[in-house]
Length: 290
Length: 293
Image: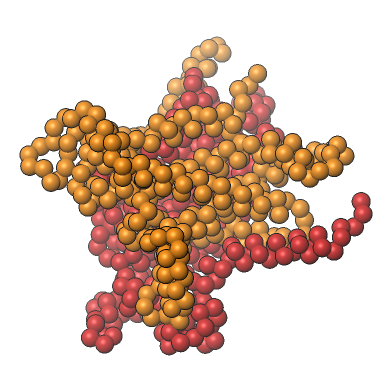
């Protein structure tokens, strides 16, 4: 092959740089905002921060009750950010655990045990994605009330797994279905039960797909704002997105932006750690023998 | 012996399936039934007394309403625009990342981030960036931008544009990573063979890349479709409820929560479900594992 002409290389690098800027700019912008003092936010250059400070972050963890003084004649509320953080952790961890264990069980049933009509079971479950969420929350709120879960984190532990399950069941069961029979059969001949064969052989093999399902679930739970703010009413019970939604933007814009970053950074770190595995898992779920 | 074994397996399968089904039923069964039933009644918070059964009247009212068709047009435009944008950008990202270059791992992370960054808070970030509160250095700039876009394309165009942009920004990242997973599955020999067979990159793209990516493209297209149709949260956040370009979701929300017309709102939001189901049935053929021969 002849070496590529310089303009191809140049064009290629330009594209790469453009793509990177396009993807990262909004994230960068929000990060820069959160490091600014109010002074710099108003008079400085919007794109850079000259005197980074963590005062917005400190603001969030300050005085957990009562006010934080006045701006002009307006009282600044204080927000129970630590509670929001703890609640968010509980909800995300619970959602992950519940979604992954339920979808593993269901996917094993559909992909491995293959009851009659398993394809249509799977399709029917996936088809729940066509249900419009628009006004679904009105009757859903009744369900939550009926179960006595209003203003309770458990309500989200019902809703988030229900939103993530169809996709997770889909990719896990497609993966299980494509695994050759022989993988377990050797273990059966040795006298292993189905459960042993699953935990010893199938589960370790499916790690990337499980990671893909987990990252998808985390992304979904972390992107919900509506259900969190609908079901969690009192300040101490809210998750970060719900709580941030109640902040006075005009007064506490910078603190709110800091809150955005405090929520986003851990999620982004976890997702980035598993990003490669996520891609491998998606490949394995969709394509035979990879 | 084998039959007994099979029967036990089937029983086990239903047992393992039941927790997921129970959860889905608990969350969805009553709400969906409620919505379907309500769409056939006159349920409205403005009305005295109980709701009465009115048959298909709500659906007829919607279809005869010119506002409905305007909403459908906006929804279709929004959906087409976002799906096309996401697939085109996502495919470019995936192709760009499919060959090795220095710093590829970092660019891959950059492409992954818009989706991995929690949507619930990035939407707020976008909102405050594009329609900033009064007191920031860039408020004037954004205000001017909004004014000029609105004056060219009509009031509310800026908000509509921001929603579309946000949806594409986040979605193209998801689709890009999904398609990259698809490209990774294509054996490199196949590309080398195609390189010998055909000189034109376009031809290679059409006859090798696209067919092999089909399941991934179909899955990506479907998820974009549902996110455009059924998800109102982001639209709501970005426009703060000031709907000038209503899509079906926001229109139904408006009817129900502000108008109190639950019957009509239910009918409105259900009108598109058969269409989505039809699309899904077609797409299943493309991304479901083939029947074993």
